[in-house]
Image (tube, rainbow, N blue to C red; front, side, top):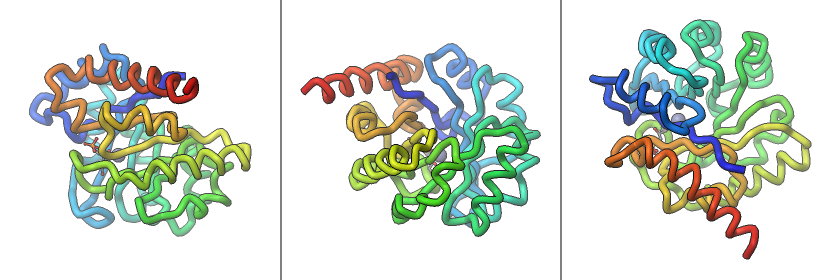
Length: 227
Ligand code: DX5
Ligand code: ZN
């Protein structure tokens, strides 16, 4: 299976977002990854509802919204109304995670939970059957263009095992520092979805880079299975 590719618009050209949205519409990207930061949960601020609404107007693909904000449960309907199709909240910021996941689903969105590099996969044992997606942060959240944390491979493998044991249908999304050098290993460790920002948008031909991420990962995965 080819991985799904969810390019992070955090690294797009904010002065000409429409151009990058059209590029993504015409590429083999599967989702648009939207990073929302509030300057409280993470030491950075990105963008909010008006920008997401504007993206939604032109996007032909699902919006994969990753909330790096404090008290995400306060804004679920607003994100739905802005155009989110998949809404992911952080484990570390959700006191009543089970309830918030149900509320996201009741609003008609797919529900994801994200874990920071320091949060163990075991923390998800009692929620894994309820979520559509687990986002594994492979950098500390807050900024694009950081280096992939190598301990993430092991974490993805552990998560894949947990999903199997619990017979969960959750997909594994890996976010942060993804490049064509580590994509194959991330996929063969068990990931279903790759998020990439800096690697795609700083490349000379972002659309081709998206295709190469999708295909080179599969080729390498097949190789890993065969050898
Ligand atoms: C980091 C964000 C990521 C980030 C990925 O806090 O969640 O989505 O933008 O960007 P790269 O691929 O540049 O690490
Ligand atoms: Zn993200």
